[in-house]
Length: 136
View 1 (tube, rainbow, N blue to C red):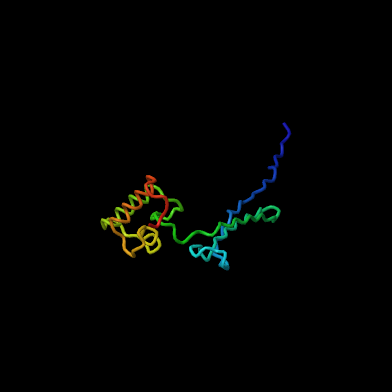
View 2 (cartoon, rainbow, N blue to C red; view 1 turned 90 degrees about the vertical axis):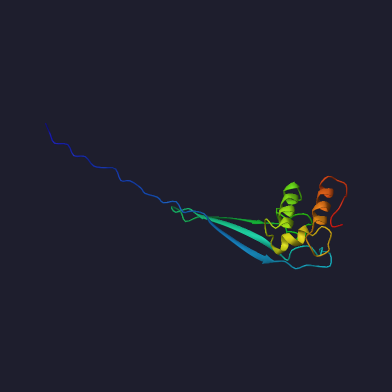
């Protein structure tokens, strides 16, 4: 029998580059038409992915709307006022949790500079539609 020669086919190895996410805070200018509660910054998130074989780059940019710095009742700082805010406010009043400065300011539903049981009652009244707006 004649000897046979075997040659392995060349293999191509590629590596995948992980996306790179860059988050930066960009100041925005307020005008007389801008409410006083509007934050002076917005967040810009940019994701860049490089394809290793061709070197092409894809970039997408997302801009978040300015966030209100005072949303009375929003002690959880999630952008909405709901029952979880009332629970967190009651825990803060009882001393079980500590709220940061912004959350304390949001929890001051009576606008008297203190977090008291009156703030918790006012928030609950707002949630069950006894009162129509905060602060009171």
